[in-house]
Image (tube, rainbow, N blue to C red; front, side):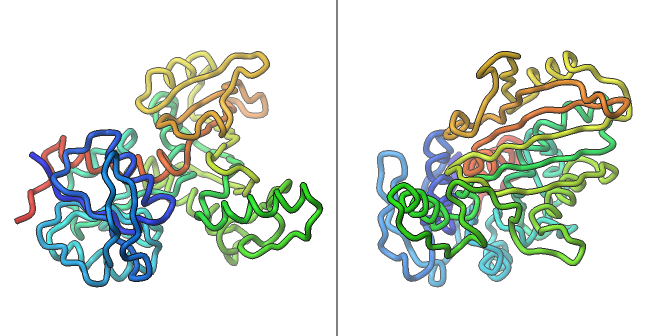
Length: 341
C-alpha cells in the first residue's frame, strides 16, 4: 500500500531534508507534495531523481492526503495542524507548539514508539527538539538498565538548528574575519564566527533559555517524569551537527563497560569509543549520517553511580527530518494509519 504525503515548509533546511530522507528510505509514497508560503510557489526542489514544484499551503486541499510532515514554525503549525488533521491526515509536526500538549504524543521511535498505540486524539504527533532527540536515544538503554536520577548536559549546537539564514550568517562572518572586513551581526545576539554563544531561544524568568527548558520537559515527557535534568545550551560555529557533553547519575550501579555494551546493542546508536587520539566522533563526521553517535564513555567519580559521555548527531536528520519519517514508518508498520479517502 502507498500513501500520499505532503511536506509543509519544504523550502527550509528541515523540509528539504525530509524530502531527501523520504527518497533515500524508499518511503511507500504514491505522491509527494512540497508546500510552503505563497512567496515560494514555483520553486523547484529535488526529490530523489525527480523535481517538485512548490505549491502554496494557503490554497492546498488536503483531502486524500495521508501524512503531512510539517516544519514551518510554531505559528504556522498552530493554525494549520488542526485544520489539516480535520481533513483526515496525520500531522507529524517539527515545531515546538504541540510538544507539551497532553493529547499530542511526543515521539522518538527508538525510545517510546509504543505511545502511538494509544489514541492520537488530535491527529497530531510532535517531533521533539533536535537536542532532546539525540539525548534520549542514548539515555533510553541506560535508564532501562540502571534508572537515571539526574542528567547534566552541555550542548554544542550547530547554526543549522536556527535555519538556513543562520548558516549564511556564519559563512559571511567567517569570510569577513579572514579578509579583515567589518563583522555584521543580524540573526545572532553576538558574533558567531570564531565564537560560542551560550544563548539559544528566548530567556525565561527562571534564567533558563527556552531551549534549556525544552530539553528538561521533553526528556521527562518522553522518557520518565522523575528524571531531573539541567542543561546549558550553546550555539557554536559549526554548520551541521549537534554535540552534547552529558553527566548522568543513576539509581543503581553501572560500569562504563556495561554502558558501552548496552549502547552498542541499542537501536539508532553507534558507539565509537577508543581511548586514543581521534577515537571519538565529532559533528563533521556525523553530518549526513542517521545514527546517534556515542563516545567518551567513562565513570564520573564525583557521584556514587555516575557516567559521563559524549553524544553527536546530525540535527537536520535524526534531530528532525529522519525522526519525523521514522514516526510515519511506525504508523505504517504498526497498522495505525488509515488510508485517506
